[in-house]
Image 1 (tube, rainbow, N blue to C red):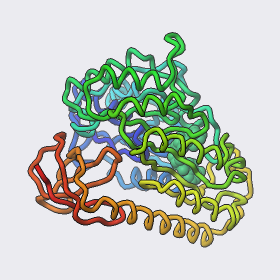
Image 2 (image 1 turned 120 degrees about the horizontal axis):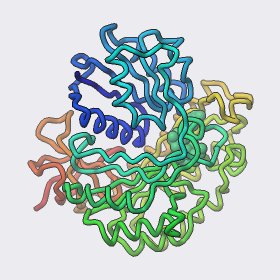
Image 3 (image 1 turned 180 degrees about the vertical axis):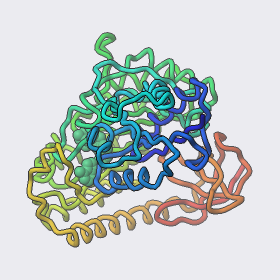
Length: 432
Ligand code: SAM
Ligand code: SF4
């Protein structure tokens, strides 16, 4: 039997798909190249905004009748039985805490012994479930994901994650170290620690917090770069800054979502920091780790957001000079507190605000990238450029994309003289 996993959403979902691929392969199933050759199609879904959620239903709806379709992930968790009612061609629903049972579910489906109303496994569990994907089940051989925590206790007013991923669970220190050592032994050059709220990680038994974990990984694991996503700006402190300053291995880019530059909006979003506190952390970082860069997420058109609030967001973006940002129009999500607020900004205004934010950021990126012309940068080769045969793509320690001609294989480091830039990438010549 062959299976195919279609993944929507964040890196956490990508990592969950890797784990499901590992579990099913170990069970003797074969991964298919695409949907067409698969008997079982698993849709690992994202519920953060409405549009991606709808994509999942149209994707599942397009699957031919001879395929068994399983919906996993965040939409499965938040919509559960409703999905079975709405989409007759979906065979099973697997929530975010139950993916590790995917092999048993596939068995049940192939034996044909499930009653449709009972084809749901979506209970939350308090236990951390260990699943370490083998190299062959991972998305690539260069950067390896390691989940260190799951869920979120922050309950930002707009966000469905606490309802789809549950309350926070933190992975024990030993298990994280083991996976990191495994990836290093397998030749991975970079490890990426994952969590919705990665910097809240702690191991209570060992009395360790996130900076301690980074310190141990940097001291003991033989990889070139360590990254982590996503950090919550509410509880950053100088211990993390000190650890980063001590270890060059900890990559010089932090994804640090501000969401808005207006303290008034942040308060309505239930983010626990102010604009001033956010900027203060950035200043402290830049003082101690001068080569650090930041990226961020922003939501525009949040209920009650004024023109002045948007101006504050634009000025924050100018002040921080982000490496890149992900920006979204506010999307009301059921279960959340903001869902009950009046969504009072019309779509045209939301779109215009998004455009202004993205244009502001584009200008900053072009400026930042131009400053790289003439410099030689160290690059980790991630693979061939699918759009330009003969070219390869790499990333710098600040997570800048670099395009260049070379035969250097994925996973190797090389040096590139930057000759040309656009807002989204650098282009250059390999200098060896
Ligand atoms: N934990 C991360 C943090 O606190 O920044 C964010 C995780 S969330 C899955 C990814 C991004 O989706 C958020 O940073 C936010 O910008 C965006 N997002 C979440 N809910 C949204 C909503 N209802 N409408 C629009 N964007 C949303
Ligand atoms: Fe959602 Fe806020 Fe938790 Fe991020 S910190 S996952 S935005 S609730």
